[in-house]
Structures are given as structure tokens and as C-alpha cells.
Length: 87
Ligand SMILES: [Zn+2]
Image (cartoon, rainbow, N blue to C red; front, side):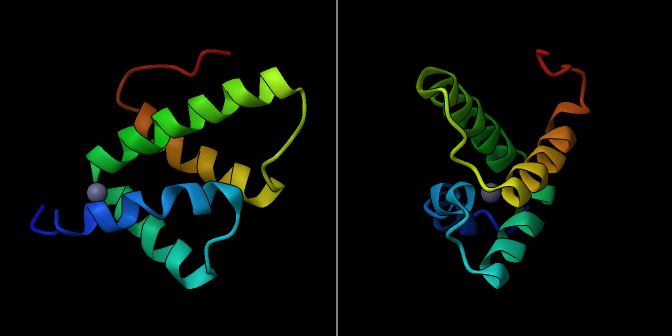
């Protein structure tokens, strides 16, 4: 709340973040924002699901391990409100 102006900025960083190409300090800022911004959590969640679909289709890993686990840690925050992960 009160920092909504930052959302657009962060949204542009999501793909770089998932690709593991975001600078560590920007990464930390993005993660901090994700913890307090439900809107961005939803977007990240959707993005991750989309990427998972691509990975299934391509049959190969494209995400660096560290980014994956960090991402899933964030997603658990988003999902802790009721929905369980599919598998
Ligand atoms: Zn946001």
C-alpha cells in the first residue's frame, strides 16, 4: 500500500528475475516488494505457471536452480492463502 507506483517498474523485471539475469540487489528489492504486494505475487505466480508449461513442452530446464527455489519460496507465500500447488 502506498507504493503502488513501483509495480510497473517491478513487472518489467520479472522475466529477467526468472531468467536469473537480474542484478542481486535489484533481485532483493523485487523479492521485498513481492512479499508485500499481492498484485505482483499473482503476476509472478501466473508467469511461473506459464514458464512451467513451456518447460514441459520443451522438455528442458531453463531456470537456474537458485532462482527456482527462491521463486517457489515466494510462491508459497502467495499460495498460503488457501490454494494448494497442483502437484
Ligand atoms: Zn507490486
